[in-house]
Image (cartoon, rainbow, N blue to C red; front, side, top):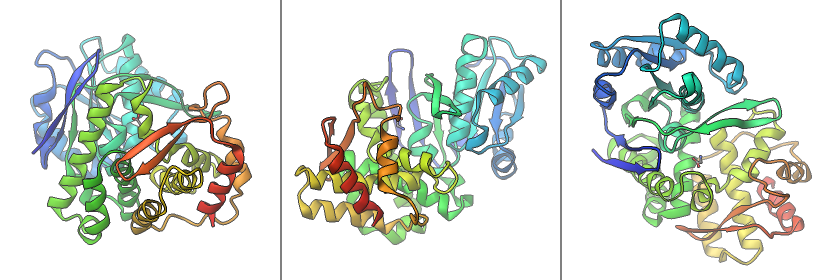
Length: 357
Ligand code: GLY
């Protein structure tokens, strides 16, 4: 099974895509490390905890159960877990194992980044979205009342262990939400991945192992390559935000409750694709191919009642908006995107309206 090297200045590590890799978790921990603290949710621990606990059999570890959900991805939870770690005997030799979906990977990683000024973290993502995106690349953080992920740190993990077997218990809606991040990878950087998604829908949806493992591996390969080229999102890494600019606006506008992150990204990809077409970057046949591929993995929840001007107004306060300039990742064709920052608000409004229609 493949393994992809992420090479960044602070740390180089492997993102391993392998069925059953959770059973090998202890091999990825430094031999002399102290106690491990597994940050997880009660659902994940109930479903998959026995496998991890068997893998950690010879190691000292504690489980920190976190309530889960976007509303709990807050500094207060980090402080509560850090206090608990101290009570349970954590010291500078301790490490965190973030075992769960994207919220657990982000918050567990952040806990590791700040506990005693930084201890290692092993990422073991258990949702498709976290496997192909959140757990790879070292972004960690928490939400503020003012917005998502507004506090955080880059904290690269010891390794990322991606076990496609855990997806068998994932609700279909969450699986589809993760697939949209894979669609994103195809559009930004892989015509081959896009072709698999466009032509093998029933195998993808039925979780045929050879197809699922392939599309995860290709997405992780892309993410590893992009992060290795630009860890801190100064340049190339921005392409991973395709669909996220307007997607974040949709999530914020609907209070982070109506759409899963991946579903909001699907909407954002539609809007960005309409926008690329509208400003003359994307030929009509490519536009139609992209919209069709996103549609294949839908539907997303109803967009009724959402007003395009409200979404456009929210773009101005997005954290990716720098000195008032909104940066859009726009496709030129499948597999190739570019960053554009000088797009007129009228075009953005019209493209958003087209995606809402
Ligand atoms: N989720 C986008 C990134 O990791 O940069």
